[in-house]
Image (cartoon, rainbow over all chains, first blue to last red; front, side, top):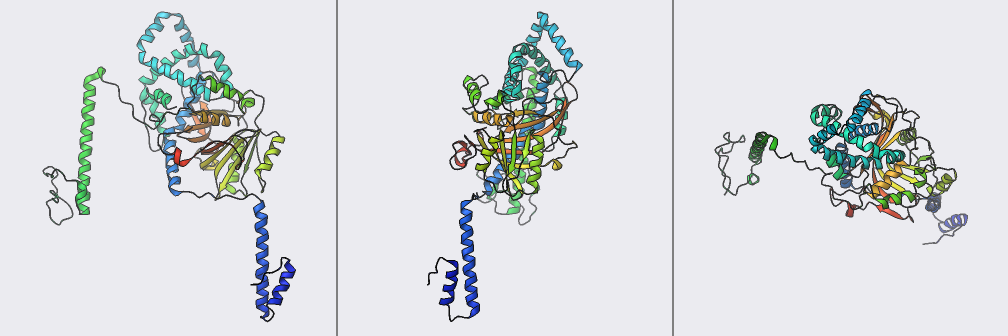
Length: 215
Length: 324
């Protein structure tokens, strides 16, 4: 083996000298090979200076497992319902201000104010809705939690007016849960229409409790 | 012992009389050597199980009706969310320490309304068509965002330039085999960097809806189910992408919903049909994210200080344990 010099042109000459009695074609091919080698060595040195791409192998089992879990999580999430609920909550908490004028809403609020004044009616309501009170409390907890996690720009608003609103909300909640417990199936109807395949059904009344425990 | 049943010799169809057959006590269906007969016996066994189950259900239902008002309440079905292993870092809404932490962390200037978010979206080298279109759609969804293509520039050199030009957030979409599959979100002035794995990306034309494009109004943000400390910080990161005052006129809402450690992003337009009913229409891209790591400083793969990394062997051991 002959060690060629580091100088490119001198190395070519050395090839010629060492292979002096070999045919011209073979000498030419040798020199071509040498040229290619030097070029790719240069390239390697240049590339190692740049950022290198690190290849991370995928693991088939893990990929499959994660995809499957993602599908199941998607089904369990019931995104449309969750978004609708959140929007309705925000509507109730007056984050939208006066943009939406729903006469029923205003009527309900006026009713609540009247009820707050007359104590006997409110007591009777509370005696009847013992179960709903638990739901109401849990719902308040959920609302507060969600309001922490949701739009932060409304935190100022909620903090200042939370106390005033809580009393009103209790009664709105009672009425809402009343209507929900009576009219279970109509609520499930439009919800069912949106979901295509698999359905995980939760009991309506205990839904807030599952939410609080898990979330 | 052999089989005590199936008295028809040699025929594949199996015996027709199901009720009068007796099995020796230690016999199980899996001991029959003949596959067809074994299959038949198994189906028969399954039918019997189903009948018993149905009978049990009916009996219970009758008992329930008989008791009437005094019936015990229906049992709550067990779900993964129900059975979730309690995470000790779950945030209590009234926790003061958390509130104090959040008032002094890197997002405090955003939440005190001192900074307006300005976002730079970029990709890895040589993005393919799908990624490019996804970047454009993402730029329409997030207000005040700009898309720049990286032509071989190193992230470490981009970051000081971005800080100089007043960008608050940087999003890098990593691409593999012509589909986007990773997302790096870093809050720029020295903020945390989160690296996500992105999956099931749907562009606007692939979503079945009849909505128009998102307008320029600032959307609202919904963050669902971010309960633990880690989830809280990630949630704040997402909230910091959007400007503070949503324009309710636009009626658009961007949702980040966390379910079992998968964060689903959706962009909808809503309309209140009545007081208790709202209709939503999906527009804009959708994707799901799974958190891989959270770093303290800006993006630095070698020397960064990791706050949280997903370690598969330690963290994926239980099906009911989630971290976000």
